[in-house]
Structure formats: C-alpha cells, structure tokens
Image 1 (tube, helix red, strand yellow):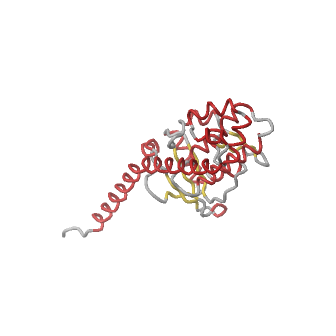
Image 2 (cartoon, rainbow, N blue to C red):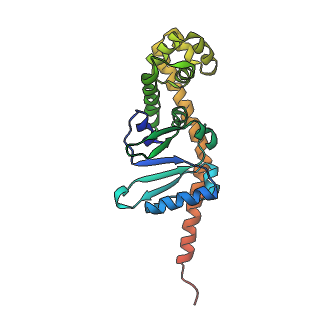
Image 3 (cartoon, one colour):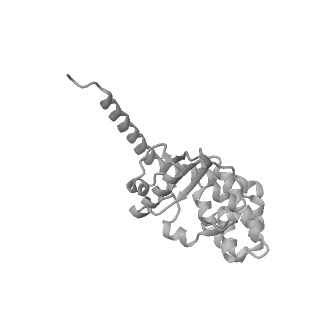
Length: 238
C-alpha cells in the first residue's frame, strides 16, 4: 500500500520500505509472524505487534536481517485515515503476476491515493503522479468511473481543466463535492493552483489531528518502557 505499490502503478518511487495493510485477527497475525521470522525481521519501534494497537490505527515497524533483504523495513497497519475497512479494500485490489508466477496484491489505485493524503511532503507529489499515470493509461477510453476518479483526485491543473471540458456533466456533479472543479470548468489555471494548495493544507492538518492522540499513546508507551528499565536497573536492598 506504499511506495512499492506506487512503482507497480507506474508512479515510480524509490523505497526501502514495504508497507502492508492486513486483517488484524489472531490467525492472520500468527501467519504474518511466521513470514517475519523467515525474513529475520525484528520490531524496531513502538508499539508492540498486537491486535489492539493495530485496530487503534498504529503502524508496527520491522527491520529485516536476512542477508538477501537486509535493511528492508516492513510497516504493518490495519487501519488508515480516510480509507475503508480491509474487506472493502480487498474487494477493490489490483493483482499483479510477477515473472515466474508470484502474485502481488496491491491496494487499488483510488484507495492508494486516499492513503497517500498525509502530512508528509513526499506523499503529495506521489498522489499527483498516481493520478497522472492512471490518466495516461486510460484517457483514450476512460469510462465514467475513471472520469469521476480524475475529477475527484487529480492534482494537475491542466489534467483537471481538460477533464472538466471533455466531461462537463461529470464536472458539474463533481464540483458539488470538490468545489475547485468549478474553477477547472472556468479554465482558470492560476486560481486552480491556489485552490489545490489550499486543499493540501486542509488534508495535512486533518492528518496531524488524526495522528496526535496516537503519537501521544506512543510517547506514553516509551515513557512506561523507560520507567520499567530504570526500576529494573536499580540495585536491590541487601
């Protein structure tokens, strides 16, 4: 669901991380633990790899030690801000067959775009490239679903203006949910750039607010762990 998925969709991003979203139940975590053991992957940060933390929205980080994947980080999550539950994501997944037969299950491109709407600087250019790559692949025969996706998520002014002009009925409906589409209909590229920047600021703030209580929980875990180590290190009374 992260940089590796973006590569498959043609929006290349160098990444040493493999981000996955999973069903947080005991059986599934047990299966993933077996795979992590095979990779000699060790948890490298808080929180612990437990169902309760995953269901709260925390990410659990691992570092692989096996020689052929040494240094690769795996980030496991079960919930994401603004993204549907796993069952819905799975129903919309994209399956890619690699040379030799292995299958890779990717988060659907529309869901991946939503997942990338974070407070991080590096994610917003990736959102733009994902939609651009999708548009380049399908613009000759788009279909209603794809047009709605572009009008809802595109971050490239010329792409938005072109889509609005080619599909005015869709643009009129999209503007009710995304007001800046009305600017695209007018063809005002400068105003559209400003509106897109404003949209990013709002989404980044929403992401900060989402993560604030989770980060406070992580800080509390670190504090409790540090306190526990301090108590253990204190000499016992004779």
